[in-house]
Length: 293
Length: 293
Image (tube, rainbow over all chains, first blue to last red; front, side, top):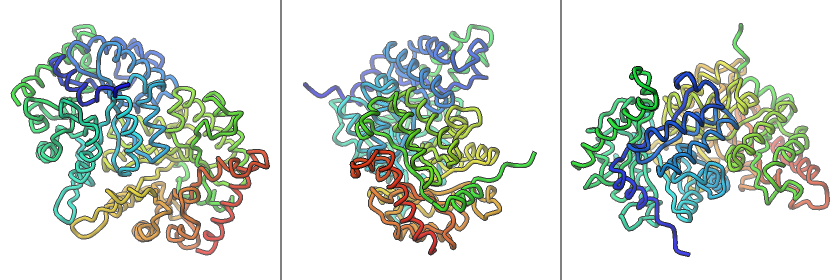
């Protein structure tokens, strides 16, 4: 049995085939959804329509587990159905869980969120992870990702204002902490670099800190970046230019609120059309940068 | 309506009342459980008996969400039942989730894992959180904890070997990163200090690094510590002496494998008795240190 195709290769092929690096973040808050979806039991009906509305314009989706966990087992069922619908629509599924724990615990998370027989994991292509515990915490994720042709995105430099408090602390050589983390990401990803030159081990690098992003990109020439902070969080497409590799490769960009709640600002049309139009506009906006890198 | 009693006060009162600082970590792996519990559907039957077996000797339990998420909705139901059984047995419930995310996402996690109406959250007294995103990520947890009289334990210095890779990095003043995190923990906990002098914002400080623990304790005189690494992970009770405040206050110590899998090394008796005896021995071992601090 040959090894499955690596996640880095699959991700870049999907971007090229779709002509889009847009990831739609799925972070449902009941009171903000169209009014017909007013209970946890209706979440998967909403995500099913949402996925089909944005699928022509997005390369993938990124459901955040928090918004599903809030609804207990109903929420976990909805997360499962969401990931399944996206996979069946040919989209890349990034489970945004930001998990980080040790040894057998990290193994259980890798199994839950990437495993072939787990409820959510079976539909997932990649999961986000937190680096704070170091290599011990990553090993089980690396093993699972390698075995199943799946991927990780390690938090390196996030998009929020207080990211500076810890991530930007300078070490004795004047090197910021996020570059320490980047060094580990490069090491963790070395054995999982595919034919495209991209590793299955990616990095989360926010759109709101382009200077830091340029440094991280220089340190990580083989690492796919998952970029939050675009759109409703404040960054424009130009601020993501430093994240791309030459030829506009190696980047996917998340937009959540600007797409999933587009109906709130575009009340004249059905919510599905509002989401589709917002996804199309985001794709076009990002393509202008991606295709000129 | 007066504010609920703070978590720091409740935790210390529970330790004093029980005469124990032992927390039993509940990290179920199916193949290691007694053979009658061989499926995800039997998890809650096992945890129910386990909770009742250890309740006389432990002040609380710490289920790790990873080992339940692995089983999807069945697992989430079992986590809920486990937390409920422990609360009904008068135990403190610390949900070990190590979550860390931003703004509305952190709010959703706080709701899921501490909220009054959430499936798991309603039974939880405290949750573990990851500090990597800084204050933005902690605010919603602080708000929920304050409002409901619940607590947090922030990862500061973990017990695993590769904790050194990032947590022990020195900044330009030669201060290790874990003390930077400790500084934030102190600030986050300031408004939630109760009559006991202990805050609702605790810290995770491993038993395997007593030198680092002494530094963290000196920086955090009002912070309850949750201490992993005792028992099967290698540290003895003496190595936890630096974690305690004067009078043996402000510390709970986790043991998982040494208790929940005690039947594997004590095959001559029913598994429930093996777990109870292991919990009793751990309590006594820890009390010798706690009562001489």
